[in-house]
Amino acid sequence: MPEIGEYKYGFADKDVSVFRAERGLTREIVEEISRMKNEPQWMLEFRLKALDIFTACPCRNGVAIYRV
Image (cartoon, rainbow, N blue to C red; front, top):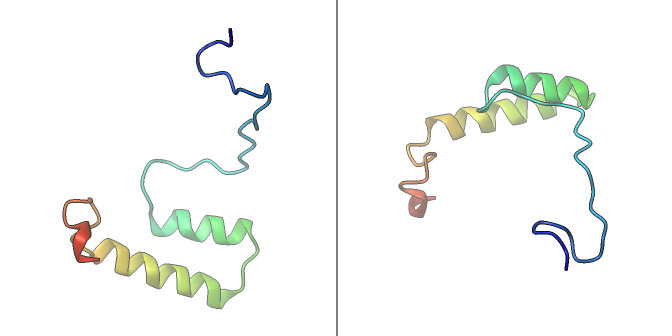
């Protein structure tokens, strides 16, 4: 009998993350990820604008997600 949590087919992908961030999402984290991915400036600006919209949204804690 397989142990609890063991994948039925006997294999699973291990966590091979290259980047680990503190909890939460900040401008600095977005900038660091963008640098690591070598993204163009327009993509960074797009992501930062999206972050501004996200942080301004009163529903980001999940309470009023129906308003999205």
